[in-house]
Amino acid sequence: MTSLDPRALRTAFGTFMTGVTVVTAQDKTGAPLGFTANSFTSVSLDPPLVLVCLAKASQNHDALVRAEGFAVNILAETQVDISNTFARPSDDRFRGVAWRRGPQGSPVIEGVSAWFDCAMHDTVEAGDHVILIGEVKAFDSSPSPGLGYARGAYVAPSTSTDALKTSANLVVSALIVRDDAVFLVDDGIGGLTLPQTVVDTAELPSSALNRLIASTGLTAEPGFIYSVFEDTGLERQHIAVLCQSAGGTPQASGFVPIGKHAYDDVSDPAILTMLERYAAEARIGAFGIYYGNQRGGEVRTII
Image (tube, one colour):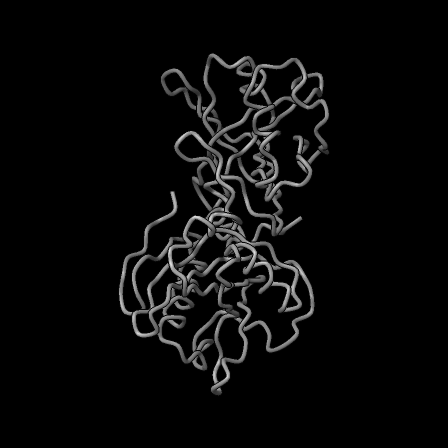
């Protein structure tokens, strides 16, 4: 379980806010209940408040409105079945689902990317929905990438790089983060850079990324694509993927804390700009995806 440090909360909100979620609670008898929601929203950091919307037509409406709290479970990309289970009418949605009570008492599903256990702060009537506002009392996250949903289909972040293989000269790099630090390696010319590898012509980018992560000696899970740009000077396409590291011993170099002058030894201007953007976004917990070339482009906010 992670402490309620404001920076940790900002990072968790920004990293997981776009995932598919299952909102859970318990009724007056202590029986678990829950439903699938496409997203939830951060309301405040002091106190830490989040909100979810519940249809008044939901069979769980009365029990959730009267509940003392609720938990928000951000599903991992391998938990499509759980999302479908909690999205369909059922007398027992928890049958066959591994879960436990969170510190505040609401059900926390095992294996999720992150969870937020909340005390009920307020309920607000809003048309045919009611807004549940919870105060986060405990939360935790894992390196497992979250399950996304867009245009009527589920999205797995760790394999989304495969859809971008449009160039025979493709480079994949791993922006591996742990706590408030980024993993950097020797660039061979006296400076530092991100771990990166050329994707073989018969190889999928996701396979190359997993191979790259394994070569670092770290345990890390690929997350969402963080940057896509054309290196026009070298005539190659570059994809950087944000990865969360939970452990492992680096084979070379190591983690560099985010801070002033932290990246002074990074020689590649494009990588330096990417790292400076990550440092700025990590401070506020809001991340975007860069599209362009090594000199300029645009950052599209993840929504």
